[in-house]
Length: 235
Image 1 (tube, rainbow, N blue to C red):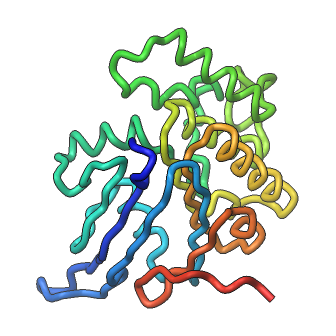
Image 2 (image 1 turned 45 degrees about the vertical axis):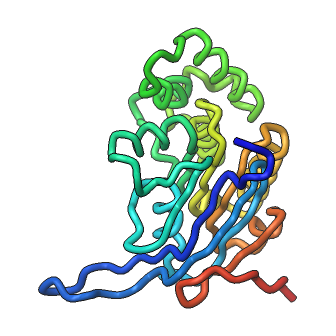
């Protein structure tokens, strides 16, 4: 990626769902424009049902827009096959959700290593070394052999963040990452995301209802009437 090219660029992105009988259904996104630079942090806020998660899924190459253009690291995602999109998700994007989605039968280390299994050619020893270093970084080095049921909610979410980072993605997308946590634990996780964004130089986009978490990001946008606008600072 060149210095003058944004990591992520959305141009006039729209999403309309099909209605009954093949008719046009509701329009969730209506001309979304967004430019995010490498190493930037930004929050997307807005009421429930406004399309925040839909937008994040399109950025994550989990869904395709019905209009507009999405470019990640200079690649037009619309030109890629489903197999190529899966490779982009594996190598360039890390995902964190409200629920940690850790596999209950696997240890924390095994859960974190799961994304590395899909990156063909990744050396097992180097992957495990990176996973162990990241788990130590987030204070979970003593939990490597524990299973999710033996950890607190905050610990599980920290492990989920490490799982999103283990393949050294350029872009991390977090969908309500603190939504299931108490206020204190949510604050700790928010600070962790900010530190990882700063230290690793990755681009971080957070969708959240939390004004506290949104306030930790360098830029805050609001999804309103299907478009992104600069969010007003809280009173």
